[in-house]
Every structure is written in structure tokens, then in C-alpha cells.
Length: 115
View 1: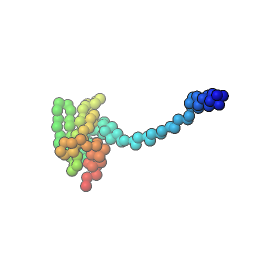
View 2 (view 1 turned 135 degrees about the horizontal axis):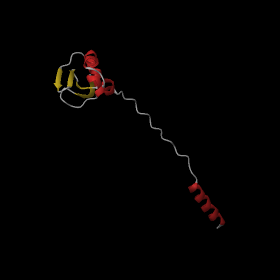
View 3 (view 1 turned 30 degrees about the vertical axis):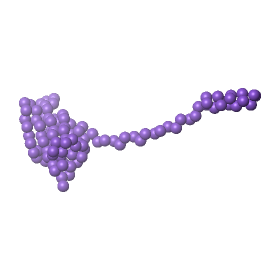
View 4 (view 1 turned 90 degrees about the vertical axis):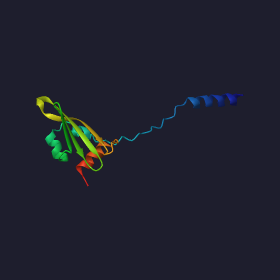
């Protein structure tokens, strides 16, 4: 009986013992370039210097939309007047020529490096 009591006590103690938890280390996400932010704030002249002549320019009130097209994507840059009245990019959309969503970084790279 005494052995049974000792064995029970040992089992209870082992159940209460804390085991070191294995830490699962998640890899840090790869940094994603914030190209949208790199284009934000550019003027029309700077955009043209970067991508070349736009395929389309649309003025609507005081805003301007410049569209740049490549074989694999279309980039629309929306420019609005900022302090001092200078037009600057505030929003960028990218898509494939058929209208499907496309990764913005890939589109910008394709427009920068036409093949």
C-alpha cells in the first residue's frame, strides 16, 4: 500500500511539473517594397521622367490621371493639388491589360524595364 501511495504521489508531482515550452520562431516576413509610397508625392514631370510619355492623360477639375501601359500591365497615377497648388501623386492603381489585379511592384518593374 505504501508503494502505491508513493507511486501516486510521484505521478501527481510529475503532472504538476512544468516543462519548458518549445518556442516556435516564426520567420520575419520578407520586407515588401512600398512602391506605392515611392510614387506618392511625385509630380507629373517626375512621373514622365520615370516611366516615359503617358498613354493617357485625363484632367478632371483640378486633378490629373496619368496612365502608363506596358505589355503586361497598366498603371494609373492620380494626382491632386497639394500645398502651393503643385500636382502630386496621391494614389496608384495597377492591373493587367485585361483588367485583372496585378502586383503593384511587378507592374512598376515591368514599366521600368520594358522588354
